[in-house]
Image (cartoon, rainbow, N blue to C red):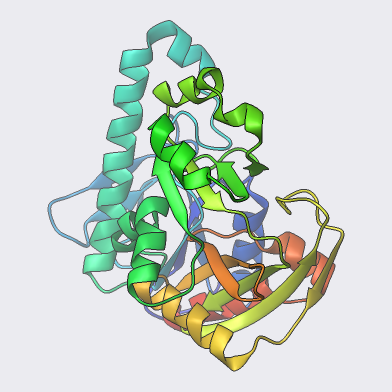
Length: 314
């Protein structure tokens, strides 16, 4: 630990095995700021957290944390389907008790983060932004603010999907995520195929054929903007080239406004150009990955994020 005597350590919430958690903690140490990794993947099995009835009464693994200088929220692992969680054996043994345990874990961790937000700790990102970031709310809020988004339908109604898809190209993907975006074909509009909507709703969206742009916003400033060259509909895992670009002033203004609308101090956002050349906002991620973009495009998103956390803790 350093001799830093500021407001408190920076709490990095996530797994120490996560490359982003490790990188942020290491860069903070280089900045002379103490980083405490709150291992939420191992909570409650190994990580021990106690909360008293005062906002600042927080003890983690025997250490009184109180009011930290800042918090970087990478992940809470509060659902059996969360990336990195292996709950298969527990679910097969007793699914009801396992789901109950995850529910209790989520309530405890959200309560902890909400305490810190209430106490005025800078959180990247705060719990209060969570409900706005759910996709059906997120895009509706951005549209209501006058920002350009693609026309979208979330539905489990086959007839609504057929009406929305009539006469144009439509992409579909999960509501929350976890699968690649695909284009609807005639076979997807058959009764048999649409019967799958009985199991879960799906996101349907006008297909945007233009270029992919990734933008990072931090504390009200665009810190990186990148063009991603790909021949695939979904660029993830299909990036052919990533290059830094300068955004037009109007697009930069829209990106900053989008982060404000959703209450995000920090975000990686995806934009895509429509057939008329307009960049439309696909989504804002409240826990965006960035190390791969730094490595391929020569940006220093890691350094900018760590510096922001360090300034908050001094």
